[in-house]
Length: 115
Image (cartoon, rainbow, N blue to C red; front, side, top):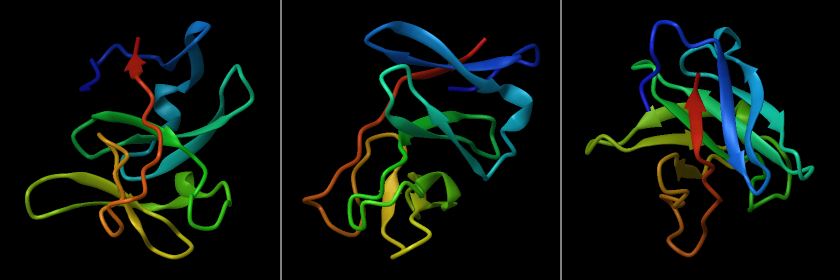
């Protein structure tokens, strides 16, 4: 999703509906923030250099640590944007949650919008 110039906050969709999770201005392109969802789970929210918004689970499935928001953003040669875990460096596609280094592993992707 590309944000508009007037966006002021980021919202994620959960079973309870759209919930505000952070201010748009807190998202530095290329870096993530950890947010708490209404059900108590954590998500990692990212803004890329093109102002596209992504949200995935913050839990690294390989270690169980809640650290994906601290990962580095990158992109594959075919344009897939990913976050690399800061611990073991596995890469997760931010659009699909697929682990690019182990086809059998996925993380949840959350619908996100800026308003």
